Length: 121
Length: 107
Image (cartoon, rainbow over the protein chains, first blue to last red):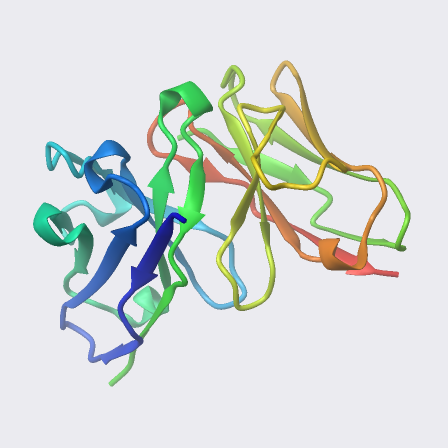
């Protein structure tokens, strides 16, 4: 079955960088986009951007432009999301998810378990 | 950016009730709308895509509809496992945006 498994929780200091990994299994990794969404405690879902694992093409939300980088290693079916210049407001659970493609309305049908990143001095 | 406005923000209901949650887009998004269910400490789960298509594995008591820029998620007969937070999401244009969520609580 389709599965996305994310790396473990992290604690970072303000100004540092974080990298979360998302390992895909149960399907051909290069066939579907990977998107990243974050959720602060008690808050809603915030889309950060997308990556096409086949081409490596990416698109980022304006809010994160210049701070976020999404990459992949196709040989191990793993996507990565790196966020730099961290501040306390970046404390959140970060999710990766699989995009279904435009024929299915570009929704997100499988999600990782989430990675809690805490930014604190 | 396209704004997605959900209502109500929270609703209390009983097992067996029919519940309707609404999401209004700030501009036309066609049928590029999905609904998700999220339980505490868990990742969201896709219920409905393309406004009215039931995701494989989602219970048939969930349904979605569209009228212009207004979208509705209906649960025909609430089950105990349905108490959760529900989000709509538009994929008509980037940035993808979500509604603020509707918390469905037990009365």
